[in-house]
Length: 380
Ligand SMILES: [Fe+2]
Image 1 (tube, rainbow, N blue to C red):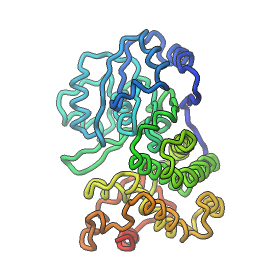
Image 2 (cartoon, protein in one colour):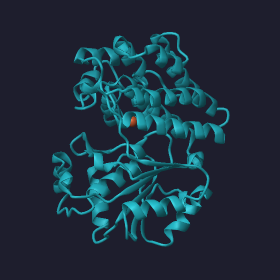
Image 3 (cartoon, helix red, strand yellow):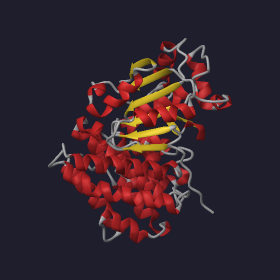
Image 4 (cartoon, protein in one colour):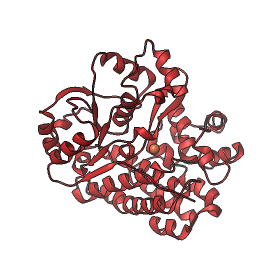
């Protein structure tokens, strides 16, 4: 038996978002008048497509914070909680990329919790004691990058640089009450960021397709996401301002998000974490660089493999690696791990740290340490 569930109300379109937000607030946060607005900064409030949102906000008591953090760490969350001490927000609105939305989820889960020290926060994240809360602050996600799909998933990633690990803050109650998709917001994104976030979405879609938790609805969203990314991403180089291409990538990211909201990710993401933590490789590159190799290992377990190959416009499983690396080359992204400072000797440490629970064991074939080692060696 397989099931698909996602409760996020999704708004798409160019009309004013005010009636949608008024109705939503009436239903999900009745009487709420204190809103915490988290933005990525960079003048996002000046974008015409969010004008109706900012007009709507004028009727509320808004605390606004710019979040300029690449990968939120326990220390960042601790500082934010201190800054918000005494601010009793009833609704969180996040306008930004995955990091801003991750922060929104954590502040939503920890809204009613007082934390005396950073260690108390760390322990609460590790033992998931925030789940004892009767309710979380509802939150709304408005993505400004086309990649993470965080607006339709129920977990957030928190890094812990001091301990060299990452944690997941997760609970089905952490789904946003709404996601507002405004492709125009991604138009100001630097091309390099557009490419790496689209490659992250590609990884979400592919990994959802083959995950042990895959189901027919997930695979439908996965295929749509892959097709759109494969069509739009190579064209973006020539026409980075194209509204049509930005729209394609925004919806591809949403579909990939919906797909992996029900499956989570697998070996590619699990291996990516030490690549990012130890070598600073951007998330979307760290996840997509192994897609071709992992696909070759997983090929016997794929459901309807011909559909996946068709979405990539590939004739064989082996083609997929070339197709993805052609996109890398088009944008000048190195395809070999040695170009990121990784050597044959250093792969042992990556293998050791590549096993994240709930990710590696979500891969359709069991990945032995030798398998991970071989994948890394083949990419050196
Ligand atoms: Fe990701």
